[in-house]
Amino acid sequence: MNPVDRLVVALDVPDLGGARALATMLSGQVGVFKVGLEQFVAHGPAAVEAARAGGAAIFLDLKIHDIPRTAAAAVRSAGTLGVRFTTLHALGGREMVAAAREAAEACGADRPQLLAVTVLTSHDAASLAALGLASDDPETNALRLARLALEAGADGLVASALEAPRLRRELGDGFWLVTPGIRLPGEAHGDQARVATPAEAVRGGASHIVVGRPIVKAGDPRAAAERVVADLAAAGPGPGGA
Ligand code: C5P
Image (tube, rainbow, N blue to C red; front, top):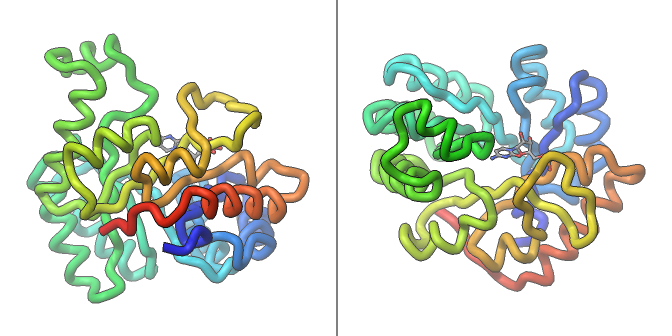
């Protein structure tokens, strides 16, 4: 995989004009633009159109979690927007993931690829216990949910780069592994407690990395994206994904 194709930039800005300007400025340096809930709730499909100004694939981060029929309908709608990736919660269960996959398949060859979110990184052991998920530690919960989601039809996972080696060891190479929490050496972590560099993430098994603030908030976002791509290139070939 080409290093540029591995770079997902999160267009985490509130307004459409800002997202469109960023996407245009970063054109050619980014493989995928991620449209999050903030943009999509405010602007709907226009947010996807704004991101498309960058000429790259689109990742619509919907984090779907609903009854199987509704989840499937949401995936069908994402398919009509021509998005390359979307997300759903593994906690929605086997039937929901399977229904989502069936709906994705019906979208044709360029169908949305379904990425499962396992345990949100905002959870710790105590908040999982409060949800009744106390029998396992967070990592074991995440691995169990990842396996369930892949068996039910997810095309990949969203996970910390620090978990990537274990996920690859336990679950193999046949799925996308998309890792947020990426910082270049010496860069501010912000609210990300556990970070990896782009090259570390790919060496650990990531097929894609998600970068937000280090590029979006940079004085020169294009130069920042170029630095990330250079670090990705230093990682060598890495995994291809699904
Ligand atoms: O600005 P930063 O690089 O931290 O942005 C990372 C992006 O990845 C944000 O859009 C954030 O919502 C998303 N994300 C994350 N951690 C997760 C899942 C998604 O940071 N576990």
